[in-house]
Length: 476
Image (cartoon, rainbow, N blue to C red):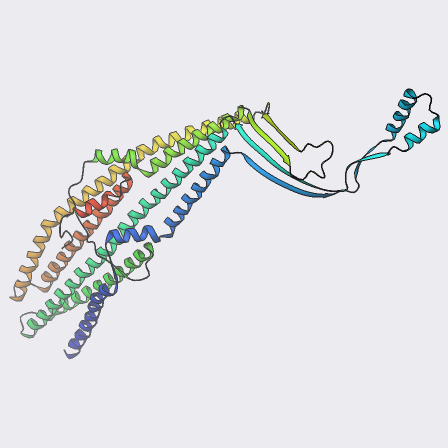
């Protein structure tokens, strides 16, 4: 008997230390309301940071596309060394000059004519062996058949698409935050329930020991109470471990190094609009539908770009030599003009690209039509899950009152010798089961609400439902 009491004391001591640790943890952990956790996740989560960087990239690309409307001014410089100067032979020029002199001056002797033509150069240097060139060149597209307009429209749509992609990721991360944040809250509440079960079983074991000593119950009754107490301690330790695992996942999501303690309780709000209002919101605000709508606009822009290949390009150009010392006699110091470029035949590649762009546009439109039906089905499914959670909570409210009274009656009957230890343990476990199921139902409601609002694209409404929730809904 002494060994039994010694073991019981050690178990109680270990349980007391675990309970003390649980009480100390919230004071050391960082207390976070749900909106604070959401703000931290939006600011610190690296996946969301990467999405914001993607938006910055598309903003820069949009600015680059606007530059296509403006002229391009380029400066170039080069120094060249040739194997020999660029020259023009003038031998024939001397012969022709002699004939002309004899025609104009027949009185001149051949010796005089030869003297004159012999003094003429035999070649003329057009370009030195080493020369420097530097030019300033201007080009300005004034008409491209819609290519520049299509490029700017595509850049704008790509920017909107990047923002929609970031919003979609934010909504997904929001649902994940609800699952992990309120998962920690649920785990902590379960720990509390399990601790109360341990306390109840310890009290029941103490009574069983006392009744056994007075001979009111048999040894088997006390042994059953002891087994039940051991099982309660095991479940309590498991609940502590589950709570720590849930807290670690939450810390990772919101990029927090310290332990966190969720302050916002599980909540219930029965003021839920009808299904049609959620479906209507989803049609206009669902992030996936918004992305597909922008993909349609992008496909239309791509079609416009391919059609522009059938139109000519017109452009202005000009050039100015910055270094004139090495210009040849055939090169101007400056020049300007207008140019037109048009492709007459390209092996039917233009028609193929236009046909492909038409197919892409049809494909995106078909995907969007199917997505509308899928989103409506998803919204209805999540709405029904939400309603199911409310119904379960209402049902558990009656059961909770019943099992609490049942436990009181069974405990009193055991003390008076009219009930067995099994009856008390069953009643205690039934109460804990209802309490935990009630907490799980609240968690299911909160998560179902978050996922429903994610499907409709209105996660900001979650704060309204949370602020107008029923008070003390989490209490078991």
